[in-house]
Length: 120
Image 1 (spheres, rainbow, N blue to C red):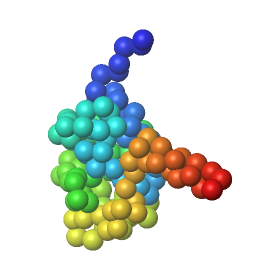
Image 2: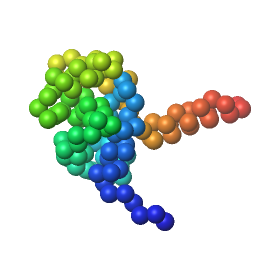
Image 3: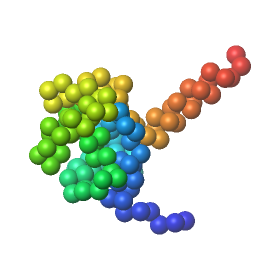
Image 4: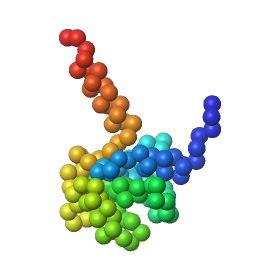
């Protein structure tokens, strides 16, 4: 069995998968990285990330709050708006529609597709 990648590497790999126009919470990313109680660790990795290939602006706080972006909340809001994510005040609107949950979301969609093709 191959050794597991360090948590920061797993976090960055997951954040790279968030598609444009979608967001994930710090807790969502932590859970996908295998550490569901490590939302603060995700925040720390995002705060220190300066890589242009990692869309850190797509990671938000619980309940749709924008959360930090190195003190550049206006920039985070603008980047999300450019991708079609509606932000009102300091919250993402219609979070249920734009929230990305990675593998869990794909697995649920696959199960729904299987149910629809089964004979009754």
